[in-house]
Image (cartoon, rainbow, N blue to C red):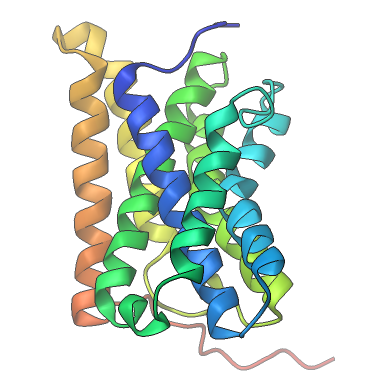
Length: 214
């Protein structure tokens, strides 16, 4: 098990993903006209939810327990949401920011899982969990349908990012490349797919077969 997993690049992706997801949770609470305490709670569970599940599954220390910056970042984003008009966070611009957080977290989750000795396929799934579960928890607590229940491409960009991260990290030593190149490419591809899905409303086809009857 690798005791030190993150590099400065992954540290940056980690804080960026936490901040963007925490902000999405805080803004949702603001739209629901909740108190600041509720807003801070939404920011925290959205920001750390996916990473917490990942760390529990890969038997790693839960990342935000010993890191004083994580809770501080979540609280700061809740304060930003509290003191700014909700209209600032409307529209597709905020969705693009959320997409950047999704890609950043997918890279981080996959890379950390590989560093802790998780095999490639489960490591890629850890990237998907890291990127998506926080938003799922946010939506469940808010009592609204989760984005993963729609055809919109959301889990797919996370899966692409995670798969490219794992493939790149496995191939990097054989190609004489640094892992940072794999992380950057994976992030760029996943974010590009999510951006395209937002811009042109791309989605996967829904199941259209008739339900079986007994």
